[in-house]
Image 1: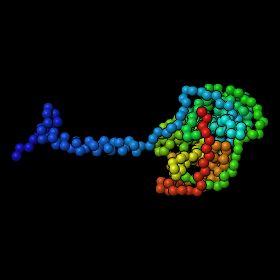
Image 2 (image 1 turned 90 degrees about the vertical axis):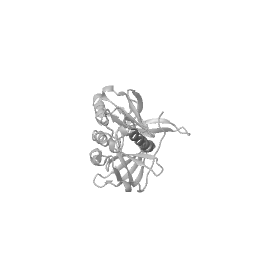
Image 3 (image 1 turned 30 degrees about the horizontal axis):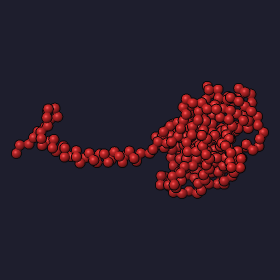
Image 4 (image 1 turned 90 degrees about the horizontal axis):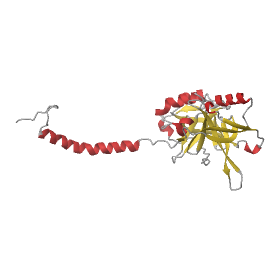
Length: 284
């Protein structure tokens, strides 16, 4: 019995060879399409963060260096006419925190900014009800300083006690708008460099219904934890901390020696103590 023989550079394949290929393509093509669709829908979706690149916005608020550099900004009034405020963390340009820029501004003006109403211009980042401002020394960000003695504008704090909470440590600049993805293993190296550059570390916690909450991380006495958390970034972790509410943020005071524990993926999805949420409407 004569068998067809085919070499790739021949101008035409034998009929028996082409019919065999067509038969298997008809089977493989639907499988490839289904696998492609499943792979696409299984991918993690891009974050919804926004970074207003190239746009400088003026923001007025009361500056405080604790628990991280921030502005306490008025965000409308409640039904009784009382002023509502949100806490807006400050971050620096590139992979740097805002501490150095604030120190330079205070030196330039020969004054301290803490407790004073200041007007800054910077780039807004916002996502999931949280607002941050990037300031850059090259933009001359400090527009005005006004002394204030209004006690009502001091941060409203509340001791929430000791909690155990599971989540992922992220750098807020990338997570809340600059990078997509701004979390997880693909972003690990960038997040570590941002945190070591001075970005305040944030714990992202996902609740049972998929809702996310965010916690600022500082040391047990309010000191910076940037160096201490670098080996835990982008991994499932459990934090044992004292929680304090500052307006619309919750701050975790973590003991550097035993307050952070790396956990397995399976343990990551099991409840751990109380998850406390604090929400506020986003400035628009």
